[in-house]
Image 1 (cartoon, rainbow, N blue to C red):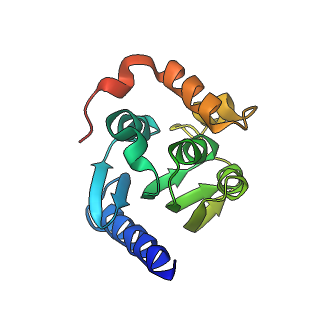
Image 2: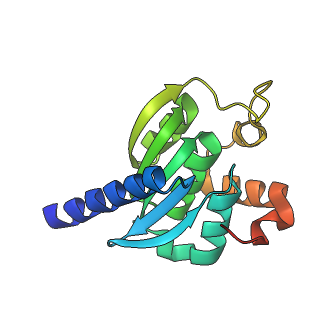
Length: 153
């Protein structure tokens, strides 16, 4: 069992390093292999990863620049094993804990704001009343619509 935990930590370390060194906004690693990376902003990159990889995301490690409630719910929905966030919100942290997802972070904030920093992020508002990761995924996917089919960088 220790061996499996060591592999997962190596995956998280690799995802974190690639996120920072290659200036990605999202990096997903499993078994030492990079599964998905993007420089797209917002939640769309993670939705693209779910659409492309599906169950392959189970037990993967995710490094993301910003993890709020919505991103944390997508991590729980996807069955990821561990998450690194440059910035995590209190709600994101709580969702990961409630769903038994290991996490590390550099900065903790009260809330994730919209791009203009004038209000809460629309995805945080959308998922605020939701606790079920599958329900959150369906609601986010519906809200975004066809945008998830565009390619990642």
